[in-house]
Image (cartoon, rainbow over all chains, first blue to last red; front, side):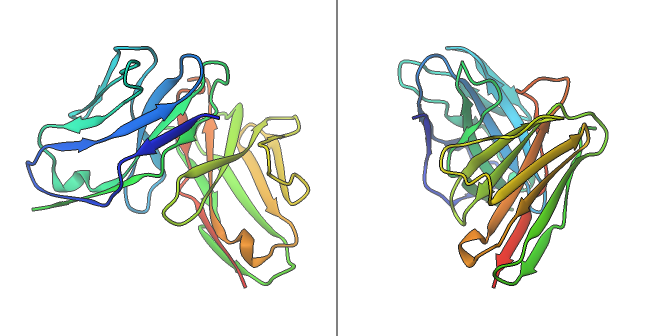
Length: 113
Length: 116
């Protein structure tokens, strides 16, 4: 079946550091890929998405590129802020099952001043 | 906009009792709602998908008689854990989609269930 694997956390960075959170997936067909973020005490929010190969999703300074050849969708940000501290989830929906999300295990990010 | 609430945020119950969790879309009509379960330090696992006015579709391995889902209106879905046991203790999260399509899934804050 479909699966999503994220890098192990937690990740701890200083403010203005570069962030990469790795995400790889296994799926049949042509899935859509997502990054969700969960801030403390809140529900998951869609951060960015990409629906086909080579698409780049971006939002709030975060970027991720859909790489079909490496089945990856790594999340990057050039300069993190304390307010970026949260749990980040990589997810996919199969091309044939619109809306059914398969999540990675989540990566806790803590940014220190 | 697009807020989803859950109630209660946490609940403790005795083994053998039933617990109902509500999921509401506060400012939009949710054509489809999803229920997820999350174990500590693990990812969210989809339990079931419900469409307003029809029976829920359960994922493989999820007992539909144990986890009763009702989606009676476009703004409310409920998950009832029947005859709860300690192994049902978990974090339950709902999400909803509206006219924005399934790519735009709005998540509730979750409900922590502890069964003693």
